[in-house]
Length: 275
Ligand SMILES: O=c1ccn([C@@H]2O[C@H](COP(=O)(O)O)[C@@H](O)[C@H]2O)c(=O)[nH]1
Image (cartoon, rainbow, N blue to C red; front, side):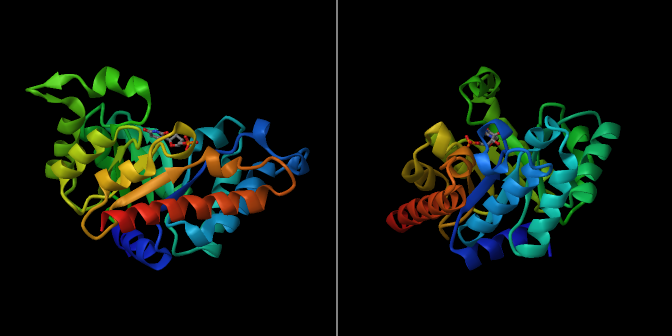
């Protein structure tokens, strides 16, 4: 089954557009995990299991694992999700971008080592830097377009031939790079007007990975109004820290579960309002 099919089934089966972001920061871990050797895996596994009923995707951010020399725990986590929650796709947030020969290695890392269903990449180095990912046509490739951070405007808003660069990226991906129907775009929830412009540019079918609700303050209703397609889907709305660190007390698993439910319900209330 392709990534796109798996994602469509996950949206439908879970009735959720929530992507739970996995950004494990040991400095913010609850006390009961202190001293455990595999605490990054243990923390993420329990978050995954608690939030899975409300999630249609998981998004581990690779830097949080690599910084702690915990890539083996990321491998184990991806294996756990495949085994315990096989219908929920894993989007590896790696934001890679390099020359083709190196990109081949990054693609192998994402799709063979971690067996991710999809990966995030930077478009900045152009077509040959993303081509190696397309050699895995059953996997998803999310290209950075209009990122959620304020500094994203430094380059993404530059005018090129009368339109901002992020819209050129959206057109390039939709018209040229999406030969296998496997591409998506990353567009921040913190910029709903640009999210609407991207949706209008790429049409209804392209999935948009949308970080920025929760800790970054993006508005859920504005996000859904701007980015959902007519079927009420089309987006992976990501929240990481707001769910992961909903509590640092003994109730952290229940608090994460409750926050995932609350976020899923807020998104669904906005979908109902849009319909
Ligand atoms: O434009 C982007 C692209 C990626 N991210 C990533 O999403 C999460 C957001 O975490 P929160 O705690 O929900 O703010 C994080 O992994 C970022 O690296 C993004 O924020 N913006």
